[in-house]
Amino acid sequence: PEISILNIVLQILYATFILFGIFVLCGADPTRHIFHTILSALYVAALAWLTPISNKTTKSNFSVQLSQRLQLQTDILASYRLYGTVLGIIPLQILNILDWGAQVQRWPLPLLIGSTYGWIVGTLVGIIQTQLRTIRQKN
Image (cartoon, rainbow, N blue to C red; front, side, top):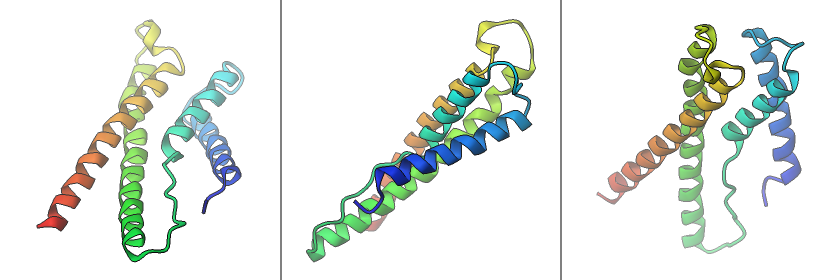
């Protein structure tokens, strides 16, 4: 494949390190719940950066065009997943600030719930966008 598994793992670990720093800057206590913060950063990095890899080993003209189309759809889907993940975290972090004493507000649940919902919404919007693009290209 074009992208090796080691390269993907290194990208996710790098993103985990960056996200951990961002979480600490945004208020996560680096001395309490450090393991939860690291795992949350790994989870968000995996959601945001993992995308399917297209296989470009065939050489026929039709398969090259199909591969390019699939790669474009994969890129669109990956972009919407990334945006959805990031935008899903922000509103649910308000639960972390407003302290009502509910279990859903405990660190890192708002982050995990927001990133998961954002990823799902981003995936759905990405699928709709690729389908609309395909319909427009047929017309």
